[in-house]
Image (cartoon, rainbow, N blue to C red; front, side):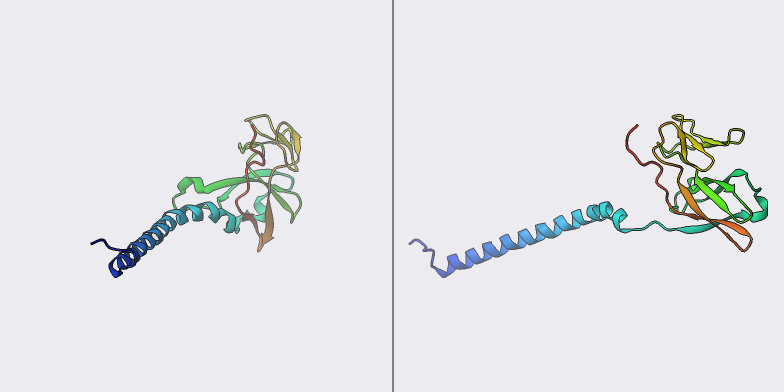
Amino acid sequence: MSESADSPEASAEDDRRGFLARLSIILSAVMGAVITLPGVGFVLAPVFSREPRVWHRLGKVDSYEVGKTVSVEFQNASVRKWAGVTALTGAWLRRVSDEDFIAFSINCRHLGCPVNWIEDASLFMCPCHGGVYYSDGDVAAGPPPEPLARYQVRVRKGFVEIETSPVPLTTNDQV
């Protein structure tokens, strides 16, 4: 005797088969989400997070001579616990007047090489590709597309402080 499609046993088997099919689809979707979401979070996190902006004390105002540009070191604002020595970064600090200071990023805006201050010429020079900047950070010659990046500087309670934040090293992706 053959079983018909309308019999109660066939209906129960179809219900069980449909339930298991739906359950396996749901479990597959959950496993796919569990695997995919961390990757999506990793890619989107930089878009929604802001790097910290921190004021670092560089030294007493009296320790900097008016008209001179000096190299200063401070701890990077986006330091990670594992960074170690690489957490230190630098800037070029120029005392313009008794209370006014300018701080430039130490990195060239072309490809991020560290620039040198040449006192005799009053120029910042990049040894990598020949970028040259005036004492105010503007481009004088070479491939840099923009002036040197600047940090915010303030004088507070007799100390010079610099506001550090991650500064983009370059503005283009071309060599």
